[in-house]
Amino acid sequence: MTIIAFIGLGNMGSGMAANLVKAGHDVRAFDLSETALKQAEEAGCLIAGSAAEAVRGAEAAVTMLPAGTHVTSVYEGDIFAAADRDMLLIDCSTIDVATARKVGGEAAERGFAMVDAPVSGGIAAASAGSLTFMVGGSEGAFKRAEPILSAMGKAVIHAGETGAGQAAKICNNMLLGATMAATCETLAMAEKLGLDAQTFYDIASVSSGQSWSLTSYCPLPGVGPKSPADNDYQGGFAAALMLKDLKLAVDAARSVDAPVPMGALAGQLYQMVVNGGRGGRDFSAIIQMLAEKEG
Ligand code: NAD
Image (cartoon, rainbow, N blue to C red; front, side):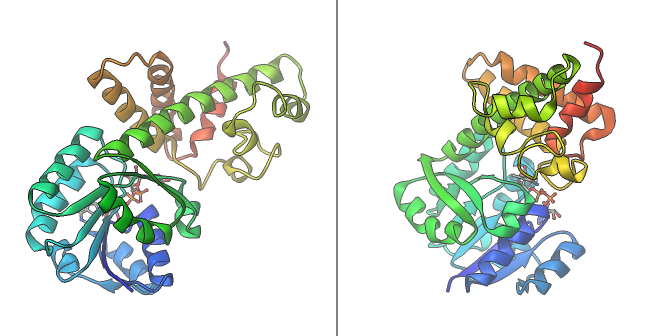
């Protein structure tokens, strides 16, 4: 059993913290939201009055926060001052690579072992304990983080040094955003060309057009395995979060002069999805926008 501080118990963090409790860890939770804290208490976490109180005396801290500004303020404002120097710090939030490197560097200067460990998988995977963790940090920090992350996920992969977890996450999600957009426009076009949706699915899923977006997460209801499309595009990975990740990816690409025309175009398309009022729907709902358009 490890004493673990968990900060940020929203859609993702609540399920992740519950899985740490189920694995036998002593979890001390803090969130700014009373509702989130109440839910964490029901899942068996001990409630702390602040992030500093949560980390005091803990052996590890896990953060699952909205963006880089929240991560900076929680680490610089509370964790670095209150945590014991031998404590392991794990940030699972999806944030920009530059902030991950900055906060990781500050942790190292203070003598902490820290990893950036963003996840692939949405709210259902967080509850089921089947997330994939992409981890950036030293070999030693990775080895310490692995058993804790394994209690919340199905795969824990060391991506490289500090910031490499975030780099892997945004590269993966840029690929996903672009393939989902391409899959959706293709399915919409196939229908307009008179192809039966199930027949085209059967063909493409065993042909060179096959992709995860098509065969594991088909954006059409009633076709392929169950996906958010079968639930009116609710309960998956929100289009607004895909837009957030595409913006992070395009910014990161710019910082290293990597040309990403497909990623940038996917970002523009997801901006249109959000502007059109579908930001809260699953990201596969981009098919609704693409099917509506005249051409
Ligand atoms: P969320 O908004 O539901 O939860 C974030 C929580 O952090 C909220 O409960 C909020 O009150 C809390 N918080 C914010 N500032 C705080 C502070 N200073 N101190 C304590 N608590 C604070 O977000 P989420 O959907 O759980 O996503 C969390 C992270 O995971 C994001 O970085 C997101 O990009 C990433 N992510 C989300 C999904 C998804 O499907 N939702 C999938 C993969 C990755």
